[in-house]
Length: 179
Image (cartoon, rainbow, N blue to C red; front, side, top):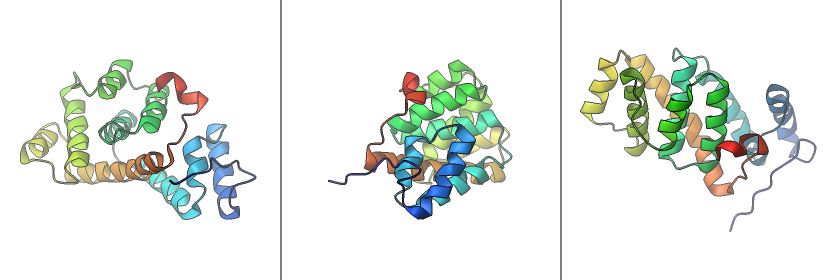
């Protein structure tokens, strides 16, 4: 059985210490996900870079949070659901949207539901959503660019979801209310 360490900044591998310091500066603490990823500086660096790039997409903050939540839900990632439910609420995503995704229910807003379903389907089918899901996504006003940006968000969540699955990452106190 693999036994992952939840690294502190000062006891992490040397190549990861500055990365963890940047996470701490951004969040005010180091989430356990980053502490676990610190075992592999390239993984932590990639995750942080992909996260930064995803935040630069044309998707709105709410749309990005829907992608992250829907991918984490489909991948059944307990840690990321707790973290992103917390972050989504802090980012202004309505509580009803967060709860609907958490329990795998359709969203009331047709555009946002098309995005949720496209993301969910992209993960579930490993990149082969049905023509109907794609048509619904496009009919809601999303473009080819948006579809590729969803792929980027799914990539970000794949890195974190799979890390959490392997490591059984403990949920941080900051996210525990949404676990």
